[in-house]
Amino acid sequence: MPRLWRFEGTIDTDVLAPGFYMKSPLPKLSNHCLEAVRPDFARTVEKGDVFLANANMGVGSSREQAAEVLKYLGISAVIAPSFAGIFYRNAINLGLPVFTIDQTLMSMPALVDGANVEFHFDVAELKILDDATCIKLIPLPNFLKELILDGGLVPHLEKRFQQEGSSS
Picture: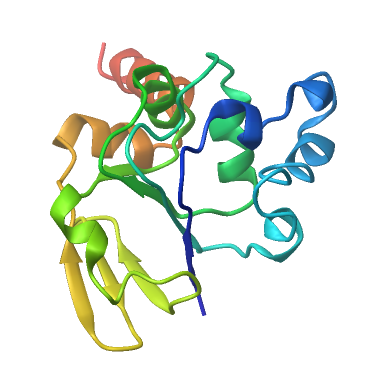
């Protein structure tokens, strides 16, 4: 069952993709994701888990690997009150869903680390199964949803070019 990973403090790109491992292949780099703040994260995260962070998620350098490792590890969505612009764009371009949550909701008792969750991409909703709390997230525009569902910017553009080529 997917779980919620709640992170306090600032989560920057250096803890997501540590500089020492940047030249490593993605599987090795991902083994070190968040080891400075949650050493157990990379080895215990599971496909479908949801990542909840504080404001300015992904601040730091422009390394796209910071979003890429989260997608590689199976995170189904990254949720935060706000995102660093480059991290947000990199996540979207890689097909990693990133949703904004109203800051006032961050203090809800249901949003605890380890809670059992369901994430509903289409309706921008996080359901906490432990107490049936439903949290509405700020929805993405349709064009960004489509881009994410296509797997990111490159697959999205390839799909569009194929459609345009087949209609001529």
